[in-house]
Length: 124
Image (cartoon, rainbow, N blue to C red; front, top):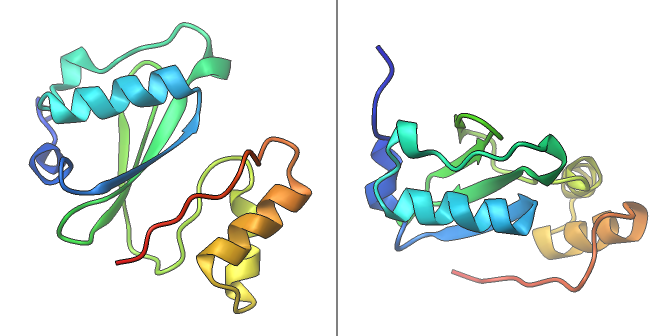
């Protein structure tokens, strides 16, 4: 029997959330997490082109991805280098070559037509 709630929900409000894909669906996923992440209330979209995913860095420092347009697909990230969205391959490649995350996002923006609109970053 699947869990009705994701344990991550309690750890999210103090964490960092990045959205990739459709902004309105991404914000709906963030709101869903903050409201307790009940599986049956996951925000659905009819058109997969407007679906979104989120990258979560929790207050305890764990990283997760959460995606899906009709039901949640939730995965813990064990790797030290994390990237998501259409430019993820460019960013991961840049990081594997020694670039920091901010420079890697710059590379992704240079080579992926769906990336851009500035780079926001946070430091611990």
